[in-house]
Length: 271
Image 1 (tube, rainbow, N blue to C red):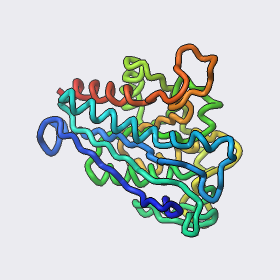
Image 2: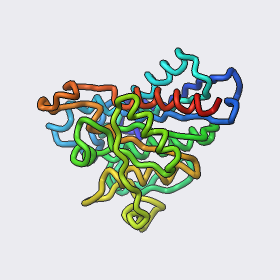
Image 3: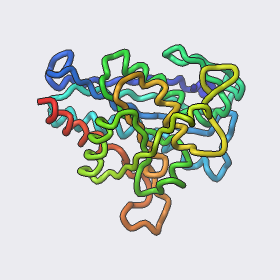
């Protein structure tokens, strides 16, 4: 990812040691993971012009987790937290990723590139791997991942999937108390076949159905056995609907308050 841009990609990790130790008292390390695509043209799978002007918002997940860990540190919460931001620019160019390429993820899985505009899940996969290798015990990722989230949920909430009911209960409570609405979608085991490739372990896109779920299921392949939640803020990060009275038009900071409140709840639970 980012090979078509004149600006090299970066993986950014910020660590807050809440107990001034390597690990917090119960060993919990919360990873806040953000998609930080600074501009998303779609790459060689170019977006339609009418959909491109707002693509500076594709870094909203990265901005949210950066803001969240800043507040968490300022509040001196007794919890170890890391923020991992996968930052890149998705542009067409002579070295850009191409449909039909097969890439190797950081954890060794091979991925067939079906659509270069499904780049967010690729960078998040490597970000999750990085978080796990650096001691994360719980992970939540925020990403403007799929246009399908707008159809499924609309601008006033975020779509989500999770591999762990207990962790999801904490995320859901945090969202409710923070006023940062989320709605959990299912992970159906029989949908896994839609991620299958004949030439790689996975393919990065599917066509036709359950787009938000499938995006989350792709990322789940890289979560290991750790509790994880994926929050798709594609619609909630930037409201374009003038008729909604509960959400201001424009960028919203979706997911920021959720992450802060989640850290608060986990800090209390770990005492």
